[in-house]
Length: 203
Length: 163
Image 1: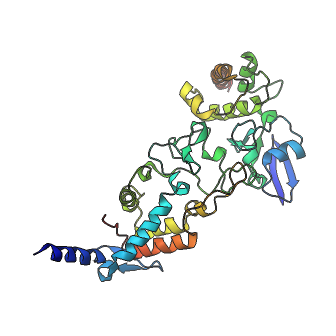
Image 2: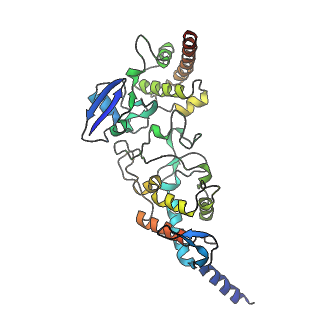
Image 3: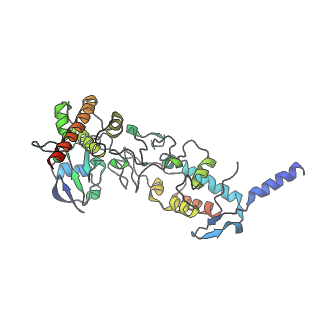
């Protein structure tokens, strides 16, 4: 087998991936993945867009690997030495909810959304590669036991996740930056990526 | 929008066109309780700290609509001249305040801390009492927090003896 043929086989393998697990389509219905032909090109594009969102400070700031929430586009450590605490909600008498409520506050500029908290430590993404982030996202032992269906629901319906597109104003009254693609495109990307088997592209 | 809640044990009803109005403004400007202070207005300094259903909150960043049906306590309701709260007793004993502006917030934060952690360590204090005092009374406050914990513990012992 010459090298050209090897390259050809690898290319074909990357373009058409047959997956043996189960996934769901964009309607949320389970479909057997062994009947799916996955376009590696489409899947890679969706994966790339998804990672552009997940690694944006609006998302990443609450997925630290050092138990310290971050603030702002510059990702500075949360003021006043706030940290994860025992239950991801800060400390006993000074918790996230001492300042953050279930909605953004236009007067103080304090952001808010339902169940405001840090992501669990097992879902720390800061400093990880896209591949490593995706592995943590998909691994039930790190993602809180979520299967693909539960992940799609979490990523596309959870109000704290979607807060990234309605982050309100900061303490100076300036609108916070949102992730690089629209909420609608993000939801489509998530649904398509999972419908295509949530394949992590091989670099 | 009409909101009903209790303030220091008294039932209150307020009607506001903006349900996001900070609870601090309602307490001070509508209900006339001036003990809670406006500091930064950004939930940063803690001068406006009060209790809502027993939890310390920054009232400058707490919309009035979330107070519906809740129990709100400010420094005026923490204790009385005849029966001061252990935190108030300790603050007097240790002569904590300098200018005093930030102190109600610190005292409310401390009272909430002692409900959660009756005998706080220095680390507990550092993590939970994160208000800002421009006079720099932190050293005296730390001593007062520890003294308040002692007073509160002794009160509990006395209460258990008499009951």
